[in-house]
Amino acid sequence: MTTVWLIGWVFTIGFLDLSFGKGLLAIIIWPYYLGVWLKGRLK
Image (cartoon, rainbow, N blue to C red; front, top):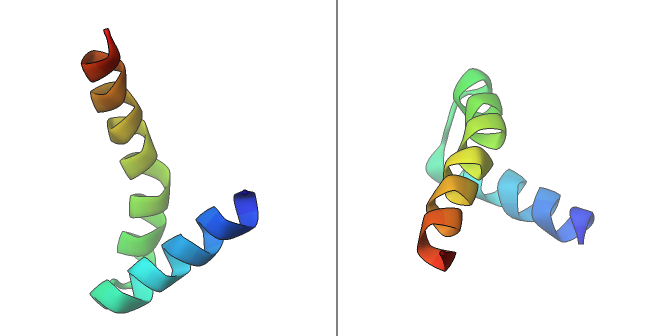
């Protein structure tokens, strides 16, 4: 599962033409916000 996640992120960063810094930031921060949003929806 981790491999699929990594491949998806590499594709997304390339598709959106993000710089290295923005891509790294997206990998670190976006899953946190997604988790917070899902937690609010599942309650």
